[in-house]
Image 1: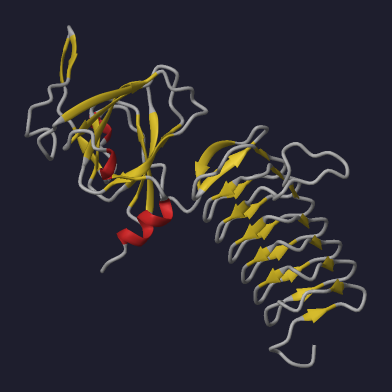
Image 2 (image 1 turned 90 degrees about the vertical axis):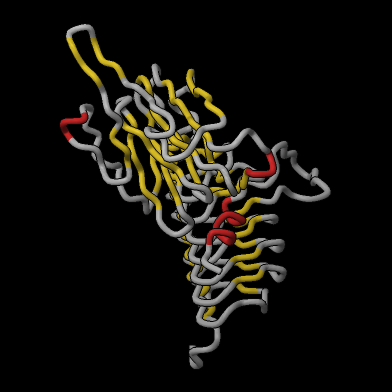
Length: 305
């Protein structure tokens, strides 16, 4: 490569596309078809195939043995591990082609582990991590870590925590949680909820979440105006709170712990214990228009004006 502003193709590589960004490298025995678009500073390792209807962002790494088929979109800073497999047709037949292939999107900064399988039409959210060998059958939320077959969420990347999980108020309450007063005697424990003193707003609605299989995830939305206060009255649940720039994980595992979620907080709850009952106090009555269900829209709205 004689000019730093040009892309590089190994003498034993084939690159038919001219839509290749500066400083991208296409290595030996790889083949890029003419319709593909690849951004700057990419690294296309040996034995990679890139089909025509493909858009790949900047600073993307494709390790050896990866095939990127029609309909695949890879955002900036994506990592695809060796022999990860994309698919684009749910019902493939030899010599039979659909009118269009399913759109699969890997958002900015996501990583796909070696040998993982991504089914057609999947969206993997920004900065998510797919474990090696995972079979992804459903969309993966932003920052989620998924493993297994089928892939399940086991945690969240770039999230502070989980916070300390002491099960009595004497052990202290982690920063960000509210310690609720518990009255105890030989007859048992009493947890009074005095309104409005115990909750940082006057609730207009209370609902309870229970019977959630531990593998399932709830929440994954924000509210424009509504604020919430969460108490796990029995069992335990992990909660992610996200203000659009930072994330923190809390474990609610005792009714003396309360978690306040102000408006414009992206909330996710996962890893429910089988006996978990989560009480949610809301400052507003249900209003579907108050929900923000798309994370990218939330991040854009959460930025300082």
